[in-house]
Length: 108
Length: 189
Image (cartoon, rainbow over all chains, first blue to last red; front, side):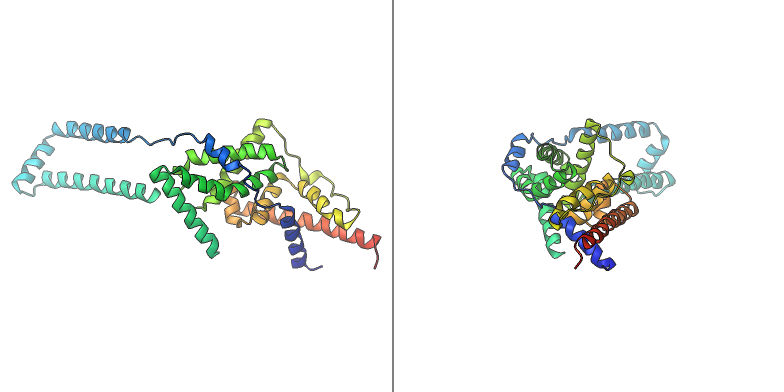
């Protein structure tokens, strides 16, 4: 008996030993009867968190002179150091939000 | 291969319908498509205890319904179900506190009296393998999963799956060879 022939024999016996798929016999109906309502993902905790984070960020920035200077220069069209810092911070936050959105979209 | 890819696409489409539209009919189709093999897997794992296997199978599909948003599509849907079934089976075993026999210490089974007994004796021989070897052979040979898929289902490293498969088959082969030798001696041509 060759090695591969023995392998085939064992595989064949194993497959023969396996009865295969079990007929439904009402199993599916029993499962469907027991199925609870689908848990819904609530959106409000996410939006509350985003709003709270944005409020905390605005509150802490409102007391810093860099924010005021940057905002004033940006509105006035002057590309000063505080305006660039403000733009970079906004760009960084947008980038993070974009990465997060892409990761979520990829996972769903 | 093309068939299994098409099957996987249908499964994914049904999963999307359940997740987006809360479509119970789509889930019902998923249950109908996969209940047969999941129940067969559990019956083998439970050595033919049909009632216990069906109880666990129900638990598997209820869990799949609740956790469907965790199905990422990296593995085939049936493989994902087999994995849930395997973990439910392990939990049930832990609840029962059934201790596994150490198959390495068991003597090889006696040769079957007649060739017709081979099927029965092969079943007994199969049960003398370690739990891990039985599980690997069930998933790789009987359920037709690849080694990688079996590793995912059983949460085992790929190398461990391969070595369990090789060792399990080698044991069965040696027992088969012994049977052949004994029957040849008993019935010389």
